[in-house]
Each structure stands twice: as structure tokens, then as C-alpha cells.
Image 1 (cartoon, one colour):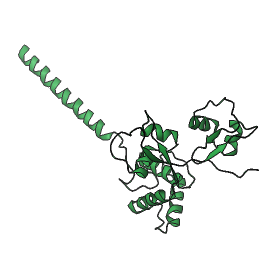
Image 2 (tube, one colour):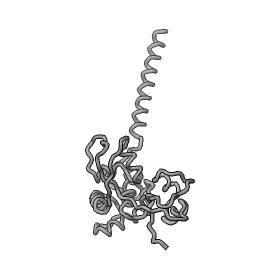
Image 3 (tube, rainbow, N blue to C red):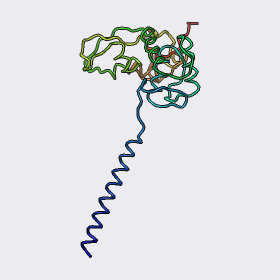
Image 4 (cartoon, rainbow, N blue to C red):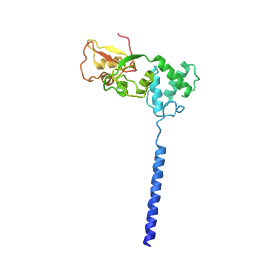
Length: 214
């Protein structure tokens, strides 16, 4: 009797282990996948990292839309405008042809400037400093798969600049260029509450609206 109970217990534990393992495998299979741009066709209802990348790239070449990773009516409208501007079939969906044309337009339109890599620099820190992405830095420099070397010169997307004038404040500059005090402060490594010195040259966040002086 005791032996039968022992073997029954062993069988139950083994069955429980298989059930839990199967559940873990199913959970792993059901985990959301981080799609990369180009791995699938995007349309209204799509969401994820590839949609976010698409939105960022469209913003980089001058289209206005929110980058939230959700392919909604606004993104579809901008995609249709891009397809129309490029003479592509206006489908509102993003397949390989639209992605390839977007890459070509980005390479032609993005103005760059040289940057000398400093000790301690990384792609992440440089991308953050110039309000861009590591993927774009790799793309425009055709960077090999190795760490950056101090002293080498790479291309970074050019940012607009503004020279501080008498009476300027971060709030006033942010308002004029339709950005935020926090974005200006972070990009330029200064305190949001700090006092600006006349003649200081500030980088303007990408996407700032450069308005004519009054």
C-alpha cells in the first residue's frame, strides 16, 4: 500500500512538472515580439517598435505626426502623403517599396556635420547628445561592428543653433521655437533654472520650428 502511494505521488509530481513546463513554453510563445521595420507590412491597427521607428523616420524628413508606436489614422494619413509625394501607390500601408523609398529620402535629406569622438563616448551617448538614434548614426556612417575609437570623426545629423541675445530666457526661447524648456536644457547640458549668458550658442531640439525673428 505504501509503495503504491509513493509511486502515485511520484507520478503526480512528474505530471505537475510537465504541466508547468508546458505553461512556461506557452507563456514564452505568447510574449509580444519586438518587430523591426521591414519585417512585416504595417497598416492601421499595427503597433510596436517598428511602427515607432517608422514614425520617427517620417518626422526626420519633415512630416508632422506623433511618435507613439500606434498605427492609427494620423500615421496612415502621413504615410499616404509620403506615398503621394514620392509617386508611389497610395495605399496607406507600409510595405517593402515604401520602406525602401523612405530610406532613400532620409539619406538624401538629412544634413550632417562632423563630430570627433571623445574618450568615453558611445553611440548611445552621441545619439542622445544630438537628439537622434543609434540606428541613424550607424546608417549614415556605415559603421562597422566595433566600439567607437576616440579621435575618429563621424557624421552626425546637423542641429539648428541659436545664439542667446540680451533679455533671452530658456522659457522665451522654448516658446519661440515651439519646444520645451526641459528639452532645451537636456540637449545643452544646462539647468532649466539657470541664467543664460549673452552669446551662448544653444542647440535646438530636432523638430523645433525655426521662426523668423520679429
